[in-house]
Length: 346
Image (cartoon, rainbow, N blue to C red; front, side):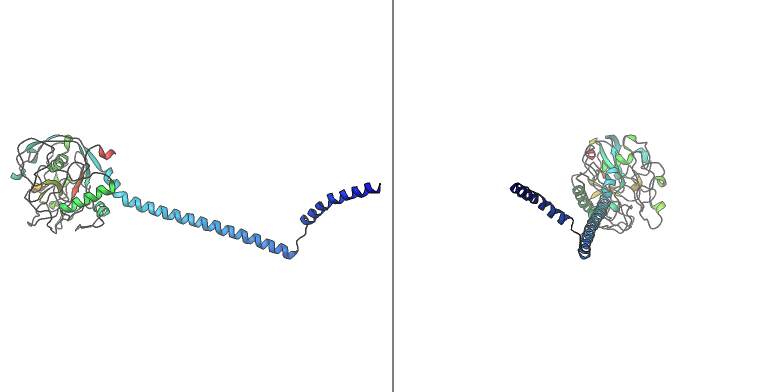
């Protein structure tokens, strides 16, 4: 019996001791110093976590600000290129009579003849002259005499325009170029929508163009698109600054032509349109006249501003002209274009 009791007692002790030990451990009462140390550790861990979260949040906010700044900078850098593409106007191809037609009345020159039939394919052309904003975005500099982001660029040679177009195409992945003289005149006349006006957009020069008569003695340039547009929605084709075309200078032929590209070679290029230094009755303001058509070397320079070139998707290159004082001027290139009418949509 005693043996049984001892055995049961041993089992009881074995079963109770671990429990007693755990209870003793769990039920341990912290001393004040132990509690203080534990709370300090917990507080330090909490503060460390808060600091880490704050640092991570600050880093995310800083990265977001930097990303927004980069995006804004990139958006501003690309703004002139987006505006350029948005401002391209479709010109449906067709046939027209090029040169000093009856629409121009008596304000014509012999070098604007003979009138001849020209047929053109469709293309896009920019509604505005190339602005200083766009030129500077591409070239990183602004050679213009009169400064202003929305003013047409001037004081640039035909060769300058070719460098500009090459860089523009590299930046945009497009195929811009200057218009041929035929493309320029067809667009200035209003293409298939032509109403037979004397000037590009109407019969009143003051309404459609900045010229010597309304620019004052300084003959300053003006923001693009501030005069009345023509039948295609194109501005400043008859004034503000003269515009380079792609062609070499050459005399007109009486024969019908399709997509003419001008002379194969010459002493200089051709420009079209009027300028702030153009006289009211000067043929430079007439849409049927090639501004002035004397031969001029496009690398020469002159103080007075002349027009860059217009954006056009057919061949295009600015023409050089003489100013009122007889010096050879650098016409700005405000005509750039896309190779075909479908490319703008790609």
